[in-house]
Image (tube, rainbow over all chains, first blue to last red; front, side):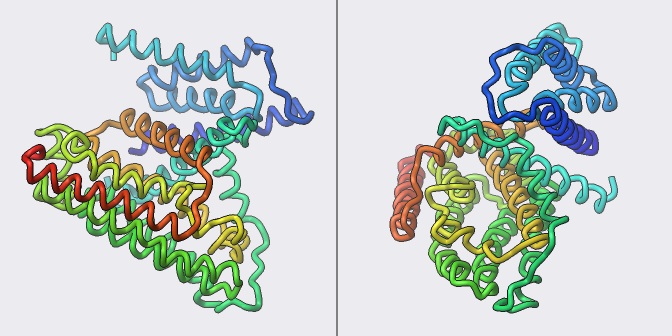
Length: 102
Length: 290
């Protein structure tokens, strides 16, 4: 169970860091952002893919930290990027499992 | 692994997972109501924040009781984690944990000396109506599996399939309890907004922090027990998906349902409980349940 505790802890820490970072970047009142932030989508994708598929506690923990960082951004930011990263992470997981690599 | 380390790890997981799920609950409710809502991590941040806030103690409180009750609240849900996820022990211990939780809710309100807390304390007695369906659900699980032990119930399900297909109405009764315990529930009469924060109104600073800590663990434990005794042996991904799904469902229900008045709340719970009880008895006598 120690590995699950590490994953959930790093995800929570990543979320808090993401929230602090995005409030520093965007101080304005709530706006529903329609732009797609490619760098954050890449961070989220790397995070979710590593988190679900690395098979290594340290790499998965780093993955969940990155995934949490994007997902934890202030309301209105990071939603689409998280969705893209999560979907790609799940697709990679299913493909690897289908090929018997996990 | 060392038992103490196992308990510590499970309590940390319960607190973090419960906090994130409660944050998700608020987020979904907000989205249903077309509000942006707080970040998912907000409940966790709130809980941590309260531990560093100034703790004021009102003059009207019964001091020892007022302070002691929050530690008892945290302790009983830690016992819930030990009896459930750690030891896979008897369901009766978890029933006892829930019964004591109701008493603590009651006493937390009465010890504050505040009229809001006292009214919430009276309503806590009424809201004990949820324990009847809970007890009935546990009895049906016992009748089908022949055991109160969670480990043996898991073993039964791995051989005969999930109990939700065998006794679906008992699962519905347990789900009623989960709806009742969820934030902003139509049955949450002890935390009605006319009572400010109900029995929590007069608890500030780290005392409120302990209450948030207990709420998060309670949510995790209830979801864990429900998934374990009705959905069979699950792995970590199964628990994660199940917990998120139940949080989604309860958030949708709570976002679209007004809070019931105390008498309507109790009557609704008892009516649904009675229908499910007699429905399950009928299923057993007609041979639908083997």
